[in-house]
Length: 367
Image (cartoon, rainbow, N blue to C red; front, side, top):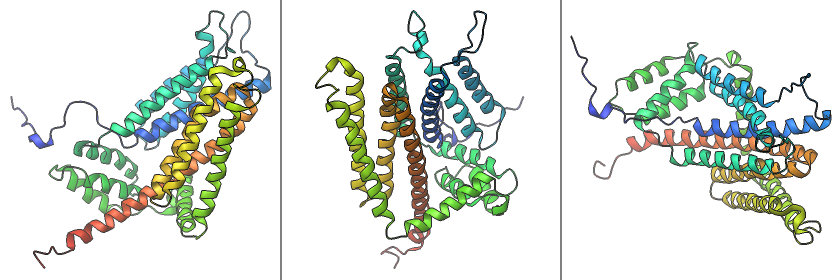
C-alpha cells in the first residue's frame, strides 16, 4: 500500500480552528439585529394589545419562532456556499435570537411573567457577555499564513461566475500576501485571480451596484472641505444628547436624588453606560486630527454602547422613545461602519501602492 508523503513541516497547520476575517463583523451584525428585533417586537405588541396565538388551552409563544429561525440560520450555513450565505445566516440568526431572548421573563419566573421587569436586566447581561465575546474575537483573533490562505480560498467563491469585482480582487491579493509564499496554492491562486476579467458594473447585483455608488459618493464627499467639520459638529451634538441623557437619568427630580427606590440599579447602569457612550464619542472626536479611521472606531464603540445597553434600558421605561433612539442609532451604526470600511480600503490601497516602491528603491549600499 502506498502511503502519501506528509507535507513539509512549514506547511502543516497547528491543530484547532482558523480565524475568519469576517468573524467580528458577522457577530457584531448579528447582535445589532438581535437588539433591533427585541425593540420592534415589544413596540408591535404594545400597539396590537399583546395578542396571543392559539386557543383551547394552547399558546404559541414567539420563542418558538426564534428557535425555528436560529435553526434556519444553521441550515443556510450548512447548505449554501454562496458568498452572502454567512450574512443571511447572521441576519436570520440575529432575528431568531431576538425572538428567543425577548421571552426570558417567562422562563425565570414561577408565574411565567412576560412583563417581569428585571428580565430587561437579564437581557442586558446576556448582550454584555456576547459583546465581550465579540471583543475577544477582534482582540485575540490571529490570522496565520495558513488562515490567510484559507480565507483567500473562501473569498474566491465570489469568482464562481468567471469574473471578479475590484474589491474582492484586492482583498484576495492582500490575503495571499500574508500567506506562506512556499505553499503551491498561493501562486496558482494569484495567477487565477489575475486572469479573471473585471466584473461589468451592470452585471453586479443590486446590493453591489448600490455599494459601488455609495463608495464613489463617499470618496467624492471626503474631499470636500466641509466634510470633517460637518461630521464633527453632528457627533458633538450626538455626544451632548447622550450627556443630557446620562445627567437626566442620574440627577433629575424624579431620579436617584429625590426617590432612590423609583429607579434604582437599572437607572444607575443606564446612566453610567450613557457616560461611557459620551466618553467614547469624545475620544473619537479628538482622534479625528490624527486618524479618521481611529475616530470612526471610537465613534462605533459609543454607538454600540447606546444600542446594546442604553437603548435596552430606555425601552424598559418608554417603548416609543426607545424605538426612535434605536432607529437613529442603527442608521448611525451602519453609516459609521460603512465609512470605516472605506478608510480601511484606502489604507490597504496605499500600502499596496507603497510596497512596490519600497522594493524598487535602492538601498544606500547599492546606490
